[in-house]
Amino acid sequence: MKVLFDTNVILDVLLGREPFAEAATYLMSKVEESEIIGYLGATTITTIYYLLQKGLGRDIAADKIEILLSIFEIIPVNRMILEGALKSGFVDFEDAVLYEGGNNVGVEYIITRDVSGFKASDIPVFNAVEFVNMLESIKGQGLT
Image (tube, rainbow, N blue to C red):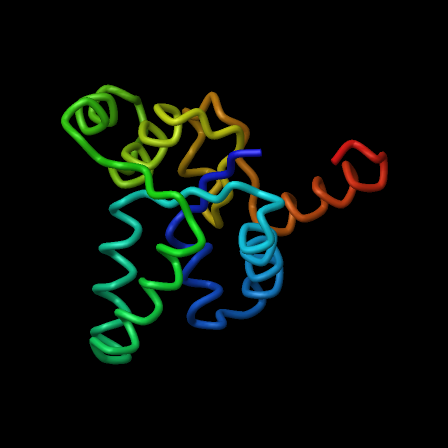
């Protein structure tokens, strides 16, 4: 299953932001274990690097980005994605860019802490806890 992770979910893991980190870390482990094909937007990578290097320094930021690049697929951002984002009806442009990129590569789900930011999405959107619960429900039914 192809799953797009919003920037805030990855930051929850990297910064240990409670009470959100536990579910987000669990989902990231599913990506590491190849049970989920995880996607990040290219803009997510640049945003995370910027925030981490500002707070923790360049070396730590680079190390964290290398880890993310080794685990996740990266959704490119190009003119088509940006033009689609502008026309998407999303209130937040960054969310629109992630959505358009995810839609372009065929993601099946979006995980975010800002579910309301993706109201215009045709792709099912969950917060991390909801998605963990859905995965566990599917697993319990023997569908994975």
